[in-house]
Amino acid sequence: MNRHDPSGVLKTTAASLALVDHILELEGATMSELVEATDLAKSTVHAHLKTLAEYGYVVNVDNEYQLGAKFCHLGDYVRTRKDYYRVAQETVSWLDSESSMDADFAVEEHGRIVSLYGDLEFANSPRFLIDGSPFHVHTTCSGKAIIAEYPETRVRDIIDRWGLPAATDDSITTEEELFAELATVRERGYAENSGEAVEGFWAIGKAVKSPRGEVYGSLNLSGPAYVVDEETRATQVELLERAAERFEQGVAELYQTQASETSEE
Amino acid sequence: MNRHDPSGVLKTTAASLALVDHILELEGATMSELVEATDLAKSTVHAHLKTLAEYGYVVNVDNEYQLGAKFCHLGDYVRTRKDYYRVAQETVSWLDSESSMDADFAVEEHGRIVSLYGDLEFANSPRFLIDGSPFHVHTTCSGKAIIAEYPETRVRDIIDRWGLPAATDDSITTEEELFAELATVRERGYAENSGEAVEGFWAIGKAVKSPRGEVYGSLNLSGPAYVVDEETRATQVELLERAAERFEQGVAELYQTQASETSEE
DNA sequence: ATAAAGGTTCGACTCTGCGGAACGGTTGGA
DNA sequence: TCCAACCGTTCCGCAGAGTCGAACCTTTAT
Image 1 (cartoon, chains in turn cyan, purple, brown, red):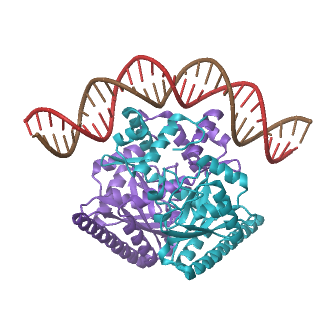
Image 2 (cartoon, rainbow over the protein chains, first blue to last red; image 1 turned 180 degrees about the vertical axis):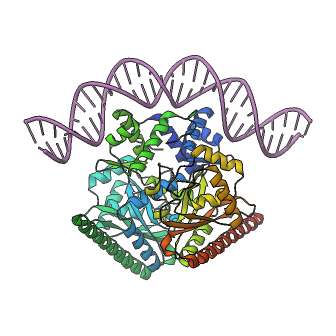
Image 3 (cartoon, chains in turn red, purple, yellow, green; image 1 turned 60 degrees about the vertical axis):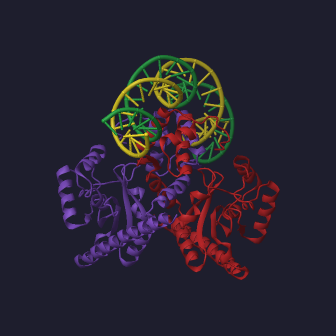
């Protein structure tokens, strides 16, 4: 599961969380499947599952263990806690309605890409995930758009940790390719993906930043490549850029309101 | 945190997950706050946080620990994995557009209520949660609508485990009240809440079932009580009932398609 | 310059998670 | 009807792992 430095990590908790990853990967699993996947004793797996179930992280339906609805609860908490969440949600739904493609907003965390707002069916689909974790930065246009804004050392930290595994035949797999691509992204102002994350899919992404220049995440448009010819691609790029402006302006207004509210007290 | 039977539960994992609950409750916490909240040594908390961080469950921004975006990732997986998820989503958005109130779809799991689809800002808002866990069944109209369909023993199991704590002054707090209310719900066909979950809020919920009679969850409408007079309440009930029909019909169609697809192979 | 707070590392003690085997409950085929 | 296979549960002894406390480092504020 590619954990880089297991020193100082509690093995019991790690084993429990690894079980969660396995259940995700297997899209639901029976106990013996998990015993096989983890090389732990049946009684040990049982103890972990019981603990996870106690906290609502796992449920057992029809002799199969599944992840619990508590993840929805916690996920929604994370989503709504971002101060820009309302702006992001509005921007995505605007972009989605204007565009013929699917819109979403994604962030980088721990060197991985998670889609926070937008059509959740595709963006976070477990079918396209290598392990239990979210997308890699180098295979998604969101990832490329975001890390193009990072200093080189930060990018290196991420690839040192997660490597550059291919998702498709067209994925970037070497450092040189990646840094060249990031230079292109900076120059062009947005990132583009042609089947690098999912075969036959075309996507564009643009990073959005706070007034102070911190990168919040990336707005994206994606869809099957055959539905967009050269001409419509240009329109999609324009839409994306307008959406990014809307987002950044929305956040700026948000800060102004907050500032005036606090000064009134 | 009201864990009923700690036997067989791994204390290390439980401690880690308890930390997650604490971070949720405190809406982000510093390490010393967590030391205080848990009565563990600083080094112990550190080890747990490091492990949770390693798996993306926790992030540290500006000397504050927060829940990670991985919960969004896992939550979306849980959401989209339900076979009725598309039907539920469509029904909720229909109901939301037709009604003047907020629509959502919630399920019961482990004796707690989690809102899966619909406006996530309010339905799962952490501000209204007593501990890190989702809503109680007896304070929400979704919960009442759902457990009204359960056999009495199952309802008793739930209240034995979670008790009947009040969320507001109007909450149900005794078994007699609850069972009387559930009888009313069954008779009337839907559940109603007047400030029992949140002060000043009015809500209605109706359970939806599979063709075989299993309860999937509950469709709900909720909003501030002052915006709905007696007359509009009647219309909202009608809308809710039509939505429930749409949902159940949608699921029935889904099963037919699945059945014909498998028979073709 | 000093203090306070957040975070990190280390070693020793002790508790607890781990494995293995044995037991129950259910399903389905002989 | 019986047996076999599978899923889940319980129990116990031992070794390994988590816990604590203290010391250390870094950053921010006074």
